[in-house]
Structure formats: C-alpha cells, structure tokens
Image 1: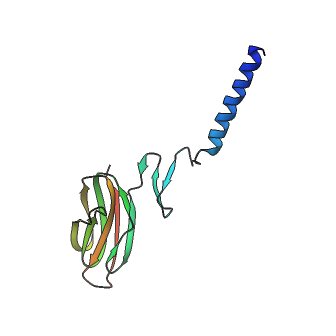
Image 2: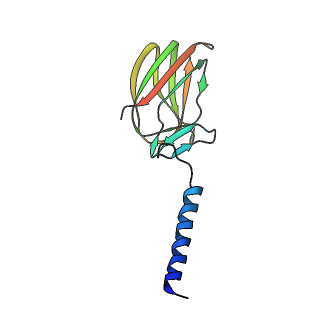
Length: 138
C-alpha cells in the first residue's frame, strides 16, 4: 500500500467525522445556541441568560422557575391594591420581600446570587389584578 493512498484514506475518514459532527450537533439560530427549560421556554441564547419577563394575573400567584443572574434589576409594576412581591429560593423555600406597594411605578432590586428563583405576587385583595415586568440593568 502506498503512503499517498493511506493519506487520502485518513483524510476521507477525518472529513466524514467532521461532517457527521456538524450534522449531529444541536441546531443553532443566527449562530447562537438556544437553551430551553423543561417546559420549552427559552432561558438562554449563547451564553446569556434570558432574565427579562412579564408576569400578570389576578390574586396571589407564584411564577414558574426563573433563571436569574446576579445584579440589579428594574421592576415595573401595576398593582391595583396593596401588593407584596417576593423572591423565593426553591432550594430552601426561603423568601425575600422585594417590594410592598400599590399603584403603578418602577423600582430597582438587587439579586445577590445567580440561580433559579420564583417570584411570588400577593395582592391584598383576593382577585386584584396586577402585572410585573422585570429586566436586568446590566
């Protein structure tokens, strides 16, 4: 067997391996990998976590699990009655009150440690409407 034939054979195997790896790799949109949670919601694009969202409803509710980065967040709210917004750590069940207020406005809060959390909205009225929009300030 000639060295040229051996070289061409190895080259073909390497090229086939590269092609197979590209075909079997997770699909990317716009060149960035997308990461979804178990429910299929987008939680990351590339290496950036999706840490912005809007919640709305009536009465007391706890959000689905949210992946939040550490840092400052701007919270815009519209509470029809006196309402408590709390951050719940699902690992130990502890909660931290972020704000207690009514009306429409904005405030900033700091998330000390990145992780998975829930937001708990507790209006004073059982069926009181509310909405919360949160976004990172970084």
